[in-house]
Each structure stands twice: as C-alpha cells, then as structure tokens.
Length: 232
Image 1 (cartoon, rainbow, N blue to C red):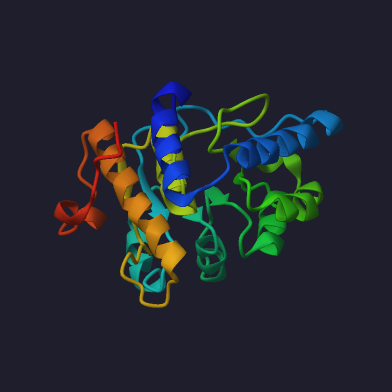
Image 2: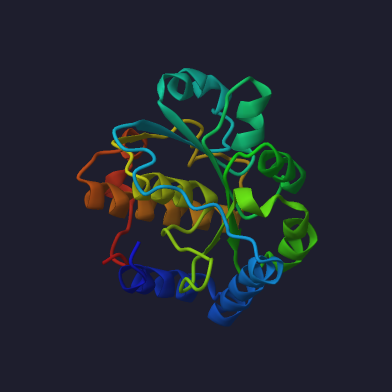
C-alpha cells in the first residue's frame, strides 16, 4: 500500500474515533527500535507469496468453526487475532497471523517460536502490550506494522482492524481470491466501539474489492448500507 494513497483514509479514521496520530507514531517508533537495538531483520514476505492462491482471511467471530470447510478449501490461511488460536486448535496450519496483541499474546509467542509469520501491529492504544510481549517473540518471524507512515523496518499494508488488515496483507502478497470465514458483522455480543470499528472494516473491504476488481461474498447484501463517502 502506497502511504500517499492510504493517508486520507487513515486521517478519516483518526478524525472519526478521535485517535492521536502522534500516539500511533510513538508506538511505531518503539516497535522499530526493538529490531534496531537487537540488530534483527524482521520477516519479509515475498511480494508474490500468495500468487494464484485462494486465501482464507479468517476472522475471530462465532461462526469461524462453522466455516471450517471454507478454510479447508483455501490454498492459504491468514488468521486475524484469536482466529489463529481457534484454527490451530482444530489442526490447521497457518500461513500468517495478523494481530495487535489485544487478546492472545501468549499464543503469538508460540507462533513466532514455531516460525509462523506474525504481523504485529503497533498503535497508540497497545504500547503496554508491545513492551510486555514483543521482546519475548522470535523477531525473525515478526512483521512489524503500523497504520501511520511506515518507517525503518515497520511496514504499512493498509487496513484498520486485525481482520481487514489481514485482507490487505493477503492482497499485497498477490492472492488471486479472498474468502472470509469467521466474519460476523452482526455479532450482538460486541460493544459500541467494536461495532464502529467493524463499520470501518466493511468500508475498507469495499475499497479493497474495488481495487482488486473482485466481489467479496461477505459483503453481499450489505453494500447498500455501507457509507463509503470517506473513501478515496
């Protein structure tokens, strides 16, 4: 994702939630510093790693296990947040994990030790988790990411929530088709802020499918209700 293309969307997200850009940048810089201090190169996926593949972008919603056949039929699996733990528990091998360490840092530790690439995201609200857990990871399996301007070893592939960032990552790696098991936009157990974040996830998926000239089944029946005025 070219940052000049992403930046207007990022600014709209900051304005909508009242987030502090400087906080994101401080988190980004701290994450970069870990690699720089230890003189470790982060995991760098090949830009065509998923070329020609159908990629399951697995969300952590209640329907994930019901959607196991969708995951099984895909060529590759990119799991968002705790979807990674759920899929591993039932025997799936993952190609990538995408997380901001909100819920499952211990599981992320194990994934990095096993050599599973993990895109660890830094933003203004998770600095404490970054400081506590990132130094324990095998950094050679970590892709450090930000939603602010990328710098040093920290990349920005686009996206806001773990789920849509996983989709943007799969797109960056050349996926031919994206499918979305475990995505539950209407989950009644979610709080207000999470619901608002999922509204943005839907907007960003609309933008991504337009960029890819693809129609995502997860958006069928929902597109007319998605406000895309804040998108480029």
